[in-house]
Length: 366
Ligand SMILES: [Zn+2]
Ligand SMILES: [Zn+2]
Image (cartoon, rainbow, N blue to C red; front, side):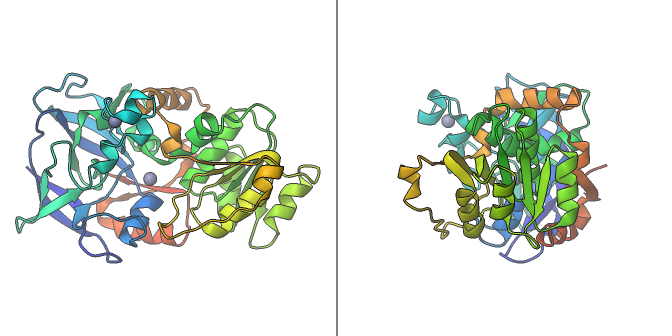
């Protein structure tokens, strides 16, 4: 079939909106009509060459939609099911899956630009093969994904909001709840209030953390951080973040600091903002050349540094839980979607992201 998609041909170039050829789902795959696709910083990192990825290809890894058709052998899903995409479609059988770490599934993380059988379903009008991105490629009206990457949720919640659970919400809420296991009453600081950082704030608030200190450079994002559960905010363009955090924690620093940007400087600040015995969690994806530094206080002050990928989540369990928290009013998604745009405006949405405007733009489809 033909479907409209946003294709990346060259690093640093705008995405091309064009009709592409999408083959029918093969064994174990499903065809999904995309309802909403969040524009995530990782898409931008691919475009800018920070995250390596084979070109050309169709980006988009945070989304939700409705199953249209099944390939042979699909048992978990039916046409009409509402699904959220998991951009790490865990195999269930590898070393990490068997150890209960599906977010590290090395089969899924080694797919490159292909699906499970090592081939692509996507090509352009010249017959050139296009790569899938994280076996998701939801910057398109329709996509074919492995059944492991389409997680069924209930039919009631709006899919253009549930799209966020596919990446930033699971990554951020999961970093607080699954990775750090923030306890009630813990003090927490979050560096960066984009989609992931705002989700860490929500995870900390759901965990009962106090205070929850949000740090960013943009006042609009800090206002949203407060709406989503931050008790205090620091605008680091005006005030010193570490001094501000110490002032709010009897001069000691926080129990947990989360870096949700992916920069060396903010990682180092996050590390310095924890007290003895505190934990610094790196959530933002740094460039492969980044060498964040920490000092020898790690030993003498028993500090912990953790990395968190996809919120240490099991999407098959966590997507449903997060959907239920949203339906119960405890997880805020509507507030995080600061703009919707049609696929034709995806480059403008990426420009907004570069400029730090809003929290999340969701691409919606008719
Ligand atoms: Zn993402
Ligand atoms: Zn696996």
